[in-house]
Length: 265
Image (tube, rainbow, N blue to C red):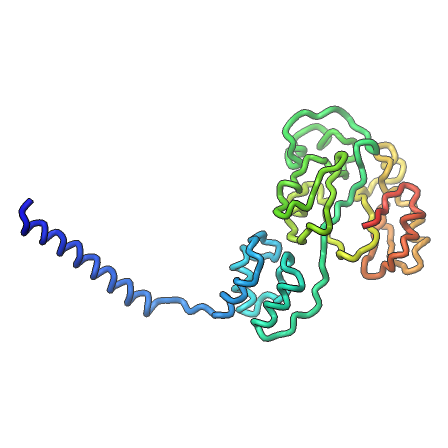
């Protein structure tokens, strides 16, 4: 190729590049989307886990919603009160009270307390139990399957399977809610971090039916409700439940429960 040809090719490529650069510069100037500077400031103080526990698509989604005024400044469950205070300062508002929540597994049906219909050797996944006989090897159809789908879902290493039942480390739990979504039996719920007791059972079967499959299941006898002077316990459809807003932490219900399904948190 001649020198003239090389110079011509370089000039053409350079000219095209210059034209594209000018075009993009003008386009960016007139069609750019203005971003609220508070959005970026909020995003900087959020944990960055992108767990979705706030109900938005990651931390950037929550930051945008907070800046737009459609999400509360304490909307990040992972960050807790500390992050809420920083976000509130950026937004120029009061943070409000943030009650720390932790996940709780409503089951005490460990391997020595529950009956089995058969031995299962298949895929270790709770969701797969919907495709096996009786929904799993355990005779209690309401209990923890123990295969750890919640463990896999937790980003914070807060859940362990101990003796066939999922257990939550309340110090590690950030209340992102991923374990709640992952549990096909819907056994996991949020309770206040400072809660004292809770009912570790989710079966609505009558007492005799429960006792046939689990030694630690709630039989709906109502002794806990009769014992509670604060009126914090109710029994509905043969299952006791503790109203954490009324519970005084006296533990009288736990001591009275004949099946010991009310557990200390």
